[in-house]
Image (cartoon, rainbow over the protein chains, first blue to last red):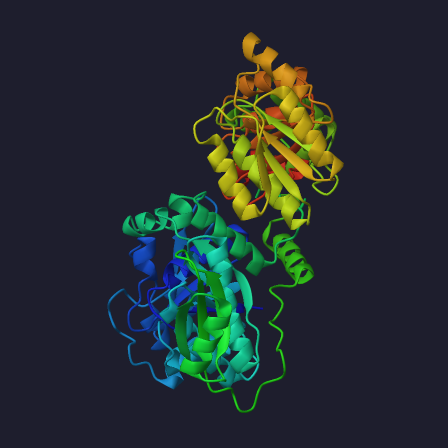
Amino acid sequence: MTHLTAIGSGKGGTGKTLIAVSLAHALAHQGERVLLCDADLGLSNAGVHLGVSDTGDLAGLLAGRKTLKDATARVACGPRDGFDILAAPSGSGALADASEAIIDRLLAALEGAPYDRVLIDLGAGVDETVMRIAGHADDILLVVTPDPASLTDAYAFAKLLLRRTTTRVPYLLVNMALNATEGRRTAEALIASARAFLRATPEYLGYVPCDSRVPDAVRRQTPLLAAYPQTPAAVAIEAIALKLHGAPARPLATAGLR
Amino acid sequence: MQLRTFLAKDMKEALATVRADMGPEAVIIGSEKAKSGGVLVRAALDTPEKEAPAEETPAAPVADFETHYRNGLLRRLRTNDTPNSRLSFDRAALIAALNKHRLPDGLAHALAESAAKAQLTDMTLALASALDKKLRIQPIDVEAAGALLLVGPNGAGKTAVAAKIAAHARLAGRRTTLIASDAAGAGAVARLETFARHLDCAVATAETTPELATLVAGCLAKKTFVIVDTAGFDPRDGKARAAFAALAQTPKVEAVGVVSVLSDAEEIAEIVEALASLGARRLIATGADLARRAGALCAVATASIPLAHITRSPFVAGGLDIPTSLSLARLLLDEQRSAQ
């Protein structure tokens, strides 16, 4: 069954797209068949991060011109692995005012997709499109930074999600934390607010440290995990992907050479 | 939600300010000591949800290990073409394939001989059976292992292997300490420290062999798993050998040779045997994802000491694989199969 993981943040500029792209890369590396869907329907830029020109044809899929298989493009991240991407052409604004019916068509297509996991990079904000997709996902990863404005916007995201679904609580990922303490503190502030006012406890998945290699990889339009697989931010994202994937605690004899 | 941050001289004053400015409904969501002295308190205020959803909704479990494991296995079984009757046995074709992978001549002929004796019509299975007689696999059991000393030539990937083993140990819930006995190498300790921070392991450095022995004994007494990272050296060189022979004599430490298979097969066979004569008891082969010719990997797998793992990923969490004779046979005959 396809597992839909939505990645949202409320506030823009939290590094959501970088996290989405890197998680797709890391999960693909752990053997999952991954589709990265850039649902920032107005301004899509996952392709810009990856430095690829073919990012699939989301508009074609939604217009019914293409099947899911034809609308996705392959992103290779190593000699043996990669993931698929489904996005609107960068900067096209083609789907800026997608109607509810279109969103539902997208969700229906993703649900039946032949992948282990579909990572959905939501747009910034908490508008109807974003919340409709988030409400439909199997789990939601909320990307927060230590910036107080990010905290309040993430809280708003969690609140609207809970209102819409009555039970769904997002996972928290703290991006751009100076260190583990700041990461934990940021998550705890949000968890404390959610407990007090929403009576719900989001779960903290981990933090990604500030790392000068991240803007460098973004500038070079090379996936972080390909450019610097062992830099602290990449190691942290790998660890979070491992938690999402639920990797076995021991190496498996079945994980052979191919 | 309203969010405010207050700086006060102590907690009492901070609480009073929060109450005064935000009212009795405000909730403290974080506090820390300010660098300039005093406390920094962050408070939030929101209208509580009228109909609270079920009290303390637990987050969905991250993933169900068993389900993932089972689905992964099923997927592999379905997608990997079974070796049945894909290639029929042909001695000349087999030797050609092994030569293409640059296996040492002796090994290639011994394998072909043994595969012919197996009298199996399927070439992959015949080769697997031949490899099976030569292969000795002894994976590291991170739950039971005591202390490992990683030795090998420069650039073999000892530090990355140390991090990978530590990651597996941490996932299995073992307390782990990483020791750098390579304090002189530029950045060697810093790199280990970065890994350790993310894996939540302790790090220590040992300058001398007695110091290392004391550290290891201390950890083992507390049932902590120890991984010792060492400086790279050429095990065939007399001087370097003498220095490392002393290190490998550290009590209660198992020396594990780490070698990159991105090399000539004969070269690597020599290095492996030199490591074995220095006291290495197992091997870890790195860089299997980068090598296009599996000769060196086969040389390592059929060496006089058992192979523990192979790594085929630069990622710390992309772990330590356990090779099998069938997976090796498939790798060696991959080109033939796809040509068919």
